[in-house]
Length: 167
Image (tube, rainbow, N blue to C red; front, side, top):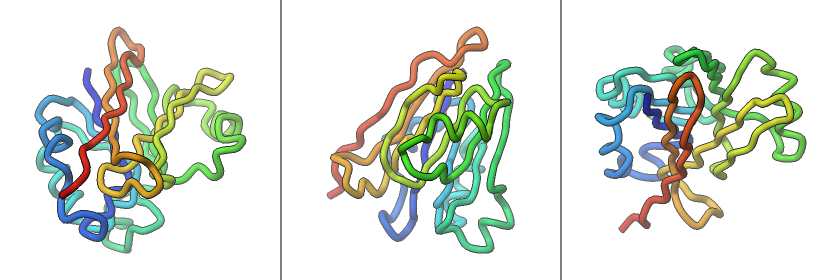
């Protein structure tokens, strides 16, 4: 099973549309995760239309229309792995311990907010993944998203994709 992870798209404020390399991934993945800060409903509509399965949450920059359609926390089980999605997890310091205590029933937590890619594992085994942002790099050198695989009930290859600068 192939996964696509993104967050903090902030459309159309930070970019006019999702980058072509990310959109090209949609037909090749089984599940798309979006960890909030969509800003516009058009992006949600697009991903709902083009994804086999979409798991998303609202973020702090999402207004009433998105909050009406998306939860604050989403959970899904895929091939025996328990995933959670949330927008914000608080400061980087202590994140693993804090998230492991808050989500003891998860194997993987996908989050966003910071626009900073993150891939760590808590002492409990909880894997924390932040794909960064495909449209707003902030202080990062590149805009980013992630892909991952599930094989035999285990999270396999997690890859951070760096996008070329927008012109």
